Image (tube, rainbow, N blue to C red; front, side, top):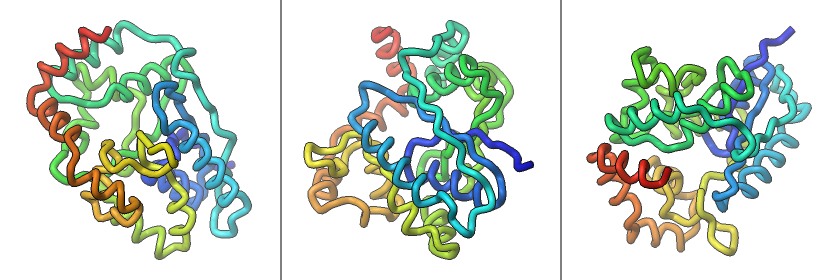
Length: 240
Protein backbone atom coordinates (compact mmCIF):
# COMPACT_ATOMS: atom_id res chain seq x y z
CA UNK A 1 0.00 0.00 0.00
CA UNK A 2 1.42 3.37 -1.03
CA UNK A 3 1.94 6.17 1.44
CA UNK A 4 -0.59 9.01 1.10
CA UNK A 5 0.90 12.51 1.14
CA UNK A 6 -1.23 15.64 1.60
CA UNK A 7 -0.22 18.45 -0.74
CA UNK A 8 -1.49 22.01 -0.91
CA UNK A 9 -1.99 22.22 -4.67
CA UNK A 10 -2.61 25.63 -6.22
CA UNK A 11 -2.22 24.67 -9.86
CA UNK A 12 1.09 26.56 -9.81
CA UNK A 13 4.57 25.54 -10.95
CA UNK A 14 6.01 24.56 -7.56
CA UNK A 15 3.07 22.63 -6.12
CA UNK A 16 2.45 20.89 -9.45
CA UNK A 17 6.05 19.71 -9.38
CA UNK A 18 5.58 18.33 -5.87
CA UNK A 19 2.53 16.38 -7.05
CA UNK A 20 4.50 14.95 -10.00
CA UNK A 21 7.56 14.20 -7.85
CA UNK A 22 5.55 12.23 -5.29
CA UNK A 23 3.63 10.26 -7.93
CA UNK A 24 6.91 9.53 -9.72
CA UNK A 25 8.49 8.05 -6.58
CA UNK A 26 5.44 5.89 -5.87
CA UNK A 27 3.45 7.84 -3.29
CA UNK A 28 -0.27 8.52 -3.53
CA UNK A 29 -1.14 12.22 -3.46
CA UNK A 30 -4.12 13.82 -1.74
CA UNK A 31 -4.37 17.39 -3.08
CA UNK A 32 -5.99 20.19 -1.09
CA UNK A 33 -7.05 23.57 -2.46
CA UNK A 34 -8.34 26.56 -0.48
CA UNK A 35 -10.66 28.67 -2.61
CA UNK A 36 -10.19 32.40 -2.00
CA UNK A 37 -13.29 34.19 -3.34
CA UNK A 38 -11.38 37.46 -3.53
CA UNK A 39 -8.67 36.16 -5.85
CA UNK A 40 -9.27 36.62 -9.56
CA UNK A 41 -7.00 33.70 -10.41
CA UNK A 42 -9.15 31.04 -8.71
CA UNK A 43 -10.90 29.73 -11.87
CA UNK A 44 -7.56 29.68 -13.73
CA UNK A 45 -5.92 27.67 -10.94
CA UNK A 46 -8.74 25.13 -10.76
CA UNK A 47 -8.79 24.79 -14.55
CA UNK A 48 -5.02 24.19 -14.55
CA UNK A 49 -5.36 21.46 -11.91
CA UNK A 50 -8.04 19.69 -13.93
CA UNK A 51 -5.91 19.83 -17.11
CA UNK A 52 -2.86 18.54 -15.29
CA UNK A 53 -4.86 15.81 -13.53
CA UNK A 54 -6.05 14.55 -16.91
CA UNK A 55 -2.46 14.47 -18.18
CA UNK A 56 -1.25 12.56 -15.12
CA UNK A 57 -3.95 9.92 -15.10
CA UNK A 58 -2.54 6.57 -16.24
CA UNK A 59 0.83 8.16 -17.04
CA UNK A 60 3.24 5.25 -17.62
CA UNK A 61 6.07 6.80 -15.59
CA UNK A 62 4.01 7.45 -12.47
CA UNK A 63 3.78 4.77 -9.79
CA UNK A 64 1.47 6.58 -7.39
CA UNK A 65 -2.19 7.54 -7.60
CA UNK A 66 -3.55 11.08 -7.74
CA UNK A 67 -6.55 11.14 -5.41
CA UNK A 68 -9.52 13.52 -5.85
CA UNK A 69 -8.88 17.16 -4.95
CA UNK A 70 -10.43 18.43 -1.72
CA UNK A 71 -11.57 22.01 -2.34
CA UNK A 72 -12.32 24.03 0.79
CA UNK A 73 -14.14 27.34 0.78
CA UNK A 74 -12.17 29.90 2.77
CA UNK A 75 -15.38 31.16 4.36
CA UNK A 76 -16.44 27.69 5.53
CA UNK A 77 -13.69 26.55 7.86
CA UNK A 78 -13.32 27.74 11.41
CA UNK A 79 -10.92 30.52 12.39
CA UNK A 80 -8.86 30.15 15.59
CA UNK A 81 -7.83 32.95 17.95
CA UNK A 82 -4.56 31.19 18.84
CA UNK A 83 -3.52 31.08 15.17
CA UNK A 84 -4.65 34.68 14.57
CA UNK A 85 -2.57 35.92 17.51
CA UNK A 86 0.45 33.87 16.46
CA UNK A 87 0.25 35.28 12.94
CA UNK A 88 0.16 38.84 14.27
CA UNK A 89 3.17 38.13 16.49
CA UNK A 90 5.05 36.59 13.55
CA UNK A 91 4.33 39.70 11.47
CA UNK A 92 6.13 41.79 14.06
CA UNK A 93 9.30 39.89 13.16
CA UNK A 94 8.85 39.36 9.41
CA UNK A 95 6.21 39.89 6.74
CA UNK A 96 4.63 36.71 5.40
CA UNK A 97 1.41 36.35 3.43
CA UNK A 98 -1.89 35.84 5.19
CA UNK A 99 -2.34 32.56 3.31
CA UNK A 100 -0.05 30.83 5.82
CA UNK A 101 -2.51 31.67 8.58
CA UNK A 102 -5.33 30.27 6.43
CA UNK A 103 -3.40 27.05 5.82
CA UNK A 104 -2.74 26.62 9.54
CA UNK A 105 -6.44 27.17 10.25
CA UNK A 106 -7.47 24.76 7.51
CA UNK A 107 -5.19 22.00 8.81
CA UNK A 108 -6.67 22.28 12.29
CA UNK A 109 -10.23 22.47 10.96
CA UNK A 110 -9.83 19.50 8.58
CA UNK A 111 -7.64 17.43 10.95
CA UNK A 112 -4.76 17.39 8.47
CA UNK A 113 -1.71 16.40 10.51
CA UNK A 114 0.84 17.36 7.87
CA UNK A 115 0.65 18.98 4.46
CA UNK A 116 3.37 19.71 1.92
CA UNK A 117 3.79 23.41 1.13
CA UNK A 118 5.75 23.99 -2.05
CA UNK A 119 7.99 26.90 -1.10
CA UNK A 120 11.16 26.96 -3.20
CA UNK A 121 14.47 28.78 -3.04
CA UNK A 122 13.99 32.45 -3.98
CA UNK A 123 16.67 35.05 -4.58
CA UNK A 124 17.10 37.67 -1.84
CA UNK A 125 14.51 36.13 0.49
CA UNK A 126 15.69 33.30 2.73
CA UNK A 127 13.11 33.68 5.49
CA UNK A 128 11.56 30.24 5.04
CA UNK A 129 14.92 28.49 4.60
CA UNK A 130 16.07 30.00 7.90
CA UNK A 131 12.88 29.62 9.93
CA UNK A 132 10.64 26.82 8.64
CA UNK A 133 11.93 24.27 11.16
CA UNK A 134 11.83 26.53 14.23
CA UNK A 135 9.87 25.12 17.14
CA UNK A 136 9.54 28.28 19.22
CA UNK A 137 6.48 30.53 19.28
CA UNK A 138 4.94 31.84 17.01
CA UNK A 139 6.50 29.55 14.38
CA UNK A 140 5.37 26.48 16.31
CA UNK A 141 1.75 27.56 15.79
CA UNK A 142 1.79 28.76 12.18
CA UNK A 143 4.12 26.03 10.83
CA UNK A 144 2.96 23.18 13.10
CA UNK A 145 1.33 21.10 10.34
CA UNK A 146 3.31 22.45 7.39
CA UNK A 147 6.16 20.60 5.67
CA UNK A 148 8.50 22.29 3.19
CA UNK A 149 10.04 19.54 1.02
CA UNK A 150 11.18 21.82 -1.83
CA UNK A 151 12.85 24.45 0.33
CA UNK A 152 16.31 23.97 -1.24
CA UNK A 153 15.19 23.74 -4.88
CA UNK A 154 14.91 26.62 -7.35
CA UNK A 155 12.39 26.96 -10.16
CA UNK A 156 15.26 26.30 -12.57
CA UNK A 157 16.06 23.04 -10.74
CA UNK A 158 12.44 22.01 -11.14
CA UNK A 159 12.41 22.85 -14.83
CA UNK A 160 15.59 20.83 -15.37
CA UNK A 161 14.16 17.79 -13.55
CA UNK A 162 10.91 17.93 -15.53
CA UNK A 163 12.79 18.27 -18.82
CA UNK A 164 15.05 15.32 -17.96
CA UNK A 165 12.13 13.09 -16.95
CA UNK A 166 9.59 13.98 -19.63
CA UNK A 167 7.21 16.15 -17.60
CA UNK A 168 8.01 19.61 -18.95
CA UNK A 169 4.91 19.77 -21.14
CA UNK A 170 2.81 18.81 -18.10
CA UNK A 171 4.20 21.39 -15.69
CA UNK A 172 3.94 24.09 -18.36
CA UNK A 173 0.17 23.71 -18.00
CA UNK A 174 0.42 25.21 -14.50
CA UNK A 175 -0.92 28.67 -13.69
CA UNK A 176 0.92 31.27 -11.63
CA UNK A 177 -0.56 34.79 -11.92
CA UNK A 178 -2.74 36.08 -9.07
CA UNK A 179 -4.30 38.94 -11.07
CA UNK A 180 -4.87 37.85 -14.68
CA UNK A 181 -5.90 40.45 -17.24
CA UNK A 182 -9.38 40.58 -18.77
CA UNK A 183 -8.05 38.51 -21.66
CA UNK A 184 -6.87 35.81 -19.24
CA UNK A 185 -3.14 36.53 -19.50
CA UNK A 186 -0.56 36.94 -16.69
CA UNK A 187 -0.43 40.51 -15.35
CA UNK A 188 3.32 40.92 -14.87
CA UNK A 189 3.07 42.81 -11.57
CA UNK A 190 1.74 40.35 -8.98
CA UNK A 191 4.16 38.48 -6.73
CA UNK A 192 4.22 35.19 -8.73
CA UNK A 193 4.73 37.08 -12.00
CA UNK A 194 7.62 39.00 -10.47
CA UNK A 195 9.21 35.79 -9.17
CA UNK A 196 8.80 34.20 -12.61
CA UNK A 197 10.62 37.11 -14.22
CA UNK A 198 13.38 37.21 -11.61
CA UNK A 199 13.92 33.43 -11.63
CA UNK A 200 14.45 33.11 -15.38
CA UNK A 201 10.89 32.05 -16.21
CA UNK A 202 9.97 35.22 -18.08
CA UNK A 203 9.28 33.24 -21.24
CA UNK A 204 5.95 32.29 -19.64
CA UNK A 205 4.75 35.91 -19.65
CA UNK A 206 3.39 37.75 -22.72
CA UNK A 207 5.10 40.91 -23.95
CA UNK A 208 2.58 43.24 -22.30
CA UNK A 209 3.14 41.60 -18.92
CA UNK A 210 6.90 41.97 -19.27
CA UNK A 211 6.50 45.69 -19.97
CA UNK A 212 4.27 46.11 -16.90
CA UNK A 213 6.84 44.22 -14.84
CA UNK A 214 9.47 46.87 -15.56
CA UNK A 215 7.13 49.72 -14.55
CA UNK A 216 5.62 48.08 -11.48
CA UNK A 217 5.01 49.81 -8.14
CA UNK A 218 3.56 47.00 -6.00
CA UNK A 219 6.86 45.16 -5.38
CA UNK A 220 8.41 48.35 -4.08
CA UNK A 221 5.57 48.60 -1.57
CA UNK A 222 6.02 44.95 -0.56
CA UNK A 223 9.74 45.55 -0.19
CA UNK A 224 8.96 48.41 2.17
CA UNK A 225 6.62 46.22 4.21
CA UNK A 226 9.25 43.49 4.51
CA UNK A 227 11.73 46.03 5.82
CA UNK A 228 9.23 47.41 8.34
CA UNK A 229 7.17 44.44 9.56
CA UNK A 230 5.74 46.32 12.54
CA UNK A 231 4.18 48.85 10.18
CA UNK A 232 2.50 46.03 8.25
CA UNK A 233 1.31 44.53 11.55
CA UNK A 234 -0.37 47.86 12.31
CA UNK A 235 -2.09 47.87 8.91
CA UNK A 236 -3.18 44.25 9.35
CA UNK A 237 -4.76 44.99 12.74
CA UNK A 238 -6.74 47.82 11.16
CA UNK A 239 -8.17 45.30 8.68
CA UNK A 240 -9.39 42.92 11.36
